[in-house]
Length: 218
Image (spheres, rainbow, N blue to C red):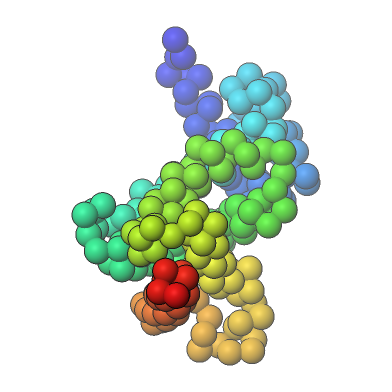
């Protein structure tokens, strides 16, 4: 059974890992810097987490858990709610999490997570299965409701398109800000962006529904 001191050291290492990984990324972060920040022995990372890479995974998992607590994907709705309402709640949650809480540390951790989606490291599978797959399954369930009876490939493509629109506001944040500042994701326009992605997605889904019906009408 872990002692209070051990739990305290582990928590300090996790917090120090957030700071050091946010500033330097996985490759350039060092165990020595993390332990120095945490006021811990250099062997502590290996003892509590099994190495720098495992601490990195724990930091990203902690980041996701905090964001999901702040902005759940299903806030204000249930599985019995209309799929359009569920999708809007999902989109709003996604973009609020992308926007972050305004702190540089959280913004950098968010970029690290986005980078894992774009160029997955060997550690991403564990992160995805535990924290991302449940929200992906939620979106797939919403799209299936909208595309009642559609094949799974169509459902997956629609869900991927929706996620792609959301991710764009993160990965292309600087470019959007320079080219069209009024379109950049910020607290003042998040509802407008949610409404646009929702309307655009619903229009695309309806078009696919109409196309899928045509063979039956022939």
